[in-house]
Length: 242
Image (cartoon, rainbow, N blue to C red; front, side, top):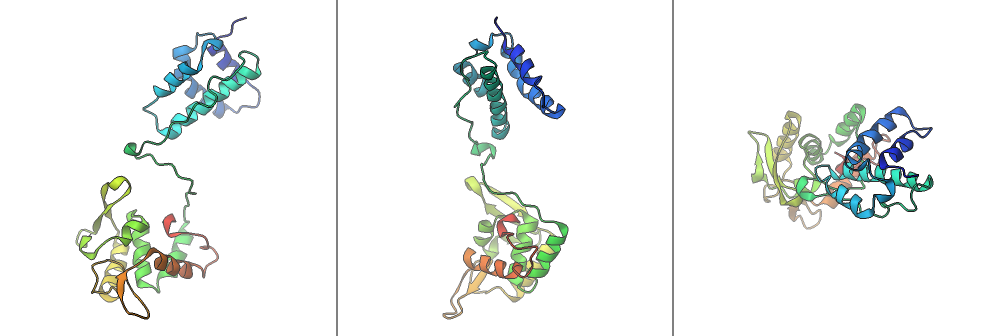
């Protein structure tokens, strides 16, 4: 008996144990495929047909695209287990990679969110170090990355408009705007603590040679760990998390 792709999908979605939200999500994902090929016998849906279909989904973000592919592969695994076909034509098809030009990036980093109480403790912890407080507020308030702040020169800060321009990933230039509390912290640092003999926005002085250099990530991170290490609720939070 010949069974179509649509009939296979119906059986796949009718399995016991699937919650309603999962069924609805799977239906939404499979519908475009079934509109195109639902009447085909499932054994005629081959690897090349699926490759062509996945390539047609170019308007989807890569994470959504790969989710579609995973669900469709699960459908054909079910078809194999049910004896409808001998092998899964979607097996080992490569996943779509992120496209940098679209702003897509793959990362394994855990995304963190600081609670209001953690933010309050964080700002209290860095208050004693004017340079670190300015950096912390800029990272939190402007959306700039650590490396971008460390390469800034004082002349690149537009203080009246509270903004600065950075060169980010892909050599793209963008403006970062900062808040009033960041402005207060930054102006205090520039007025009282920044070394004037350097073009860098954030400066450091060697304790022995007294040579003035741009602040390094290593030194800044050491200051950060020392400051937040006093609070059990802040241990493990990184500058990158801001």
